[in-house]
Length: 428
Image 1 (cartoon, rainbow, N blue to C red):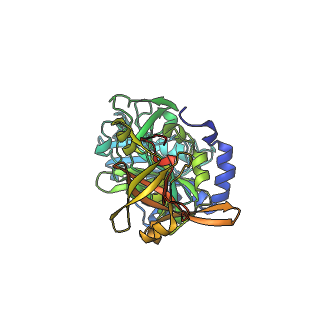
Image 2 (spheres, one colour):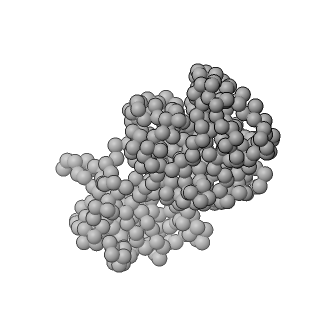
Image 3 (cartoon, rainbow, N blue to C red):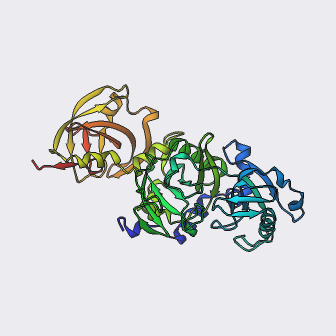
């Protein structure tokens, strides 16, 4: 694996360290029931597929107007698990027959029997009587035409402490029978949080480089309306009372992102597709003091971005730089100021002098990502972490940088190894 085993989170750590501590009982109850989730989404105005019908009792089945179903609908158990019990219908063939996404004919009587099976609890995660419902099926977005086999893909975004932590795109395959479900053989693609571009792929937790059938590379697919999905996921987490949760989205070609489900117990296979462990990411965000509303996405990009731009630049050849370099720093008004910087591979994060940052207008409230605390012989010191753009040897670097007192140093900017991925440092 390309990531450390110690960074991988297991079930015990997830349940005891995060789920029990950060998720309210009410929030978990809403996420555990697809119908309660729909009611919550409707009440708060979040976009979601339309609900066509609910079946709580056997008598609801004959009373339902089955003739109102024309095309593109899904039958689901309210408290099912792993995609079991879901029937996806593409269109109606006649008064008594439908066509599934697998191109198979389904009779109306078969659909009624399936609903009765759901009510009896055949698909309930604890084998208890359940509720069935019919909702709008969102057709496959054109962006996924060469990636998704017949069915509709969905996007999962995991949120913790109001920061997007990890994301994946789930795609239906021939093995998953048109469902974007990983337990049934769906394709899982890791997603870069900063750009919404896919990175790595797995099927049944085994790495794969190509999409089944089409042969497309799993990396490089840009998910449309990515920023909107991130914003909605944070808004939902705030309202539902879940500090640690996942929001699943489908993408409608005209209506945009729509929330399909919420989960208070996100699965852990997402780590393999992203080649990154949840444990380390959660620890970095836990207890983080955010500096105001709406900073979660900025923090996520600063901490977890894949740095595609850096990789492209690296292919053109690494830049050779010295220990001392003149860099151009962009101030709050977009102007560039040339200052002397020290390059220090022994430091992980870059830092800038507090007085300089203030003079450049970079300590305004909207530019502070979070606050860190530094302990020394002088006591506890609070250091803001801000967003900074600068140019080193002609290359643009956008980073999260710590603010500290560098008044005793000649160089008011220190560049750490986090920002040196495409540079070679020569000794002086």
